[in-house]
Image 1: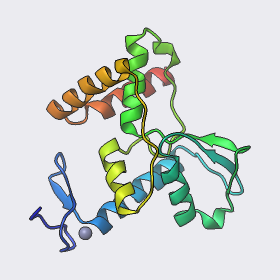
Image 2: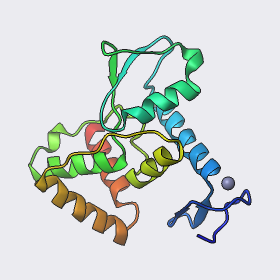
Image 3: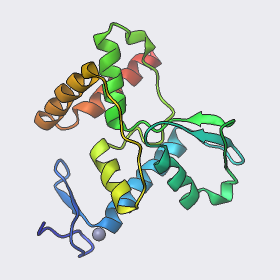
Image 4: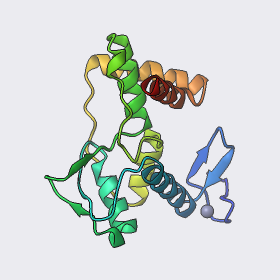
Length: 173
Ligand SMILES: [Zn+2]
């Protein structure tokens, strides 16, 4: 990749809809900033909380807590409250699946700090920071739906995000 990041370093990632290239450092920093702002805006954590990070991407949550939330004295324990780790792709798939099965009322706002991060960006972030993620297991129905979503996203960037916003609006009605 010949592109350069704004800071001058070589780029590892280009976000098409932004038309911007990122180096490892700036990319990681931006992902972390997004995760921290979701934690703040969604009021997901309080000082001295006892939390249990669950799901395929839980290793990222633990990494972020260790890196940024040490002073909060958070304890990671199986008995703590559940903090989910679904990324933006997981959520749009979950919502799409619920709608396809007629379970639209089961759509709920999630408590995942990663809900605004697309899967491909989370994978890259994990690779850069040497975080090992669990492999996602999808059944055939889910795989088919994911294919449709990926295709839509390709044609109309932002589709997955729109699906999430739609579900949140329903939930707030
Ligand atoms: Zn940079």
